Image (spheres, rainbow, N blue to C red):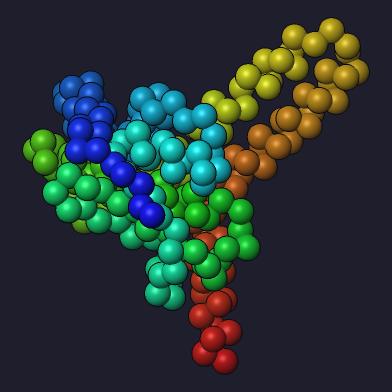
Length: 203
């Protein structure tokens, strides 16, 4: 059964867009990295797994469904009246790379955000929405992961044990670096793996 999204919730997404417009109207349009950082600050995500992101989207009046989609389509978004929905591919040819579904969700979310910008007369993306949505998805995942990891890093710095603090600190820094690298490189991996999958299908 699809989640019941009330008619009032989409106003929250509109409110985010209005906040960005009010803050950056003198230098419009803002960069995609700026929009992404403002979104993380506004939404305060408490996790980056798909389940947590489904809950985050529900707060914005957006239902998220994982479904089988045609080959080559990672995600799809649509709106009808006050309803907003994001569909994520259930089995993706590039599914071997961790984080693709989450990245796709943020990509589709950015496209819905652009609709709200247009509705209030402040379009950001013209012909480059796809590339902007990719940048938004990468930056949001990077910024949000830093927010999630920060409390753990703070706990490590407060530890009294010298060697224990150093070892845990190095492990955390390693995991943060891997997460950051995957956020930046994921779009390239997606394209490369998709091309390989297509060539195998043809052969």
